[in-house]
Amino acid sequence: MSAPARIRIAIQKSGRLTEKTVSLLDRCGLEFEWSKDRLFSSCENMGIDLMLVRDDDIPGYLKDGVCDLGVVGLNMVKESEIEDTTQAEVLRKLGFGQCRLALAQPKDRSYAGAKSLDGARIATSYPNTLTRFLENAGVTAKIVELKGSVEIAPTLDVADVVCDLVSTGRTLRSNGLEEVETILKSECVLVKSGKTLSQEQAATLDRLLQRLDGVMNAESSKYVMMNAPLDAVDRIRRVLPGLEEPTVIPLASKDKVAVHMVAREPVFWETIERLKEAGASSILVVPIEKMIS
Ligand code: ATP
Ligand code: ZN
Image (cartoon, rainbow, N blue to C red; front, side, top):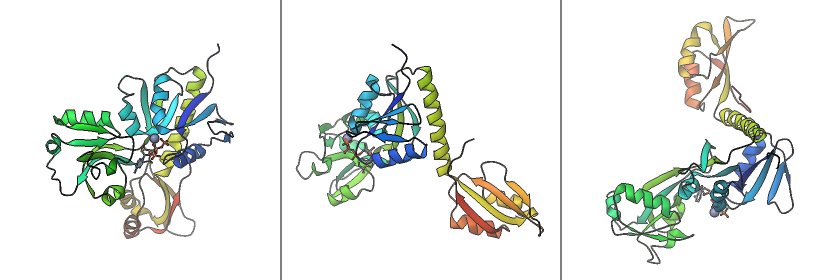
């Protein structure tokens, strides 16, 4: 049998992560042909195939080498414990799907640290992560494993406390629950299975990672242009520490220069005001589409 040539990436078929995952791959320049059943989709301009599955199944597929890469919440990676046995490796954080696994409880219950959980019944879909937290805290509690709708467990008197994923906290609040502790901070990540890649696959992965880094770097950066007197350039650099030395270009008609630089952080109105105070004028802040170092 010849060595596999294409890499297979498992992504969530339909859910909170789907749209942003597809959009990220799109911005990496991958063009997909979607098949009717949408279980598979192959990329036409790179050796990559997508597998569209439930997010819960992705850690298992990574572990068994059914896919080479997976795009999934860190919460699922931690819960499946696939990293611990070198069956998988988190390659990149992807900057979306942020949420936290948190403990929450009815408002009338007191909380003074993890010790308050001794003897409590805690409902969760994340028994492994919760077990690790409780063990570290030296607490004995009863874990009630539920597949979904964890937040209603206290109302049903199935549990005293819940351990669930939260992003805004609205669901918890509307169920009369109060967040008391964060157990895990999560976001969507790119994970590689422990399976060894063929040479061709490894080259495709390198290209993909380089494009991914280019897109992610560009997103967090801005290209900033302004005019200023030459002696203001040092002050400007202190206001806006750039990625590299700024480009300083003489202007034809004035005793001023044009300063161009890549800013690695968001440029807020306050920053622009400070640039003006430092002597800058005609300030332009433009988004960057791709940035390759
Ligand atoms: P599937 O049908 O694929 O099993 P699901 O309903 O289990 O979907 P989603 O609700 O789409 O999964 O959540 C997928 C991931 O989105 C979570 O594992 C988590 O990483 C992330 N996420 C971000 N915010 C939240 C949130 N408020 N609640 C739940 N998950 C969130
Ligand atoms: Zn799921």
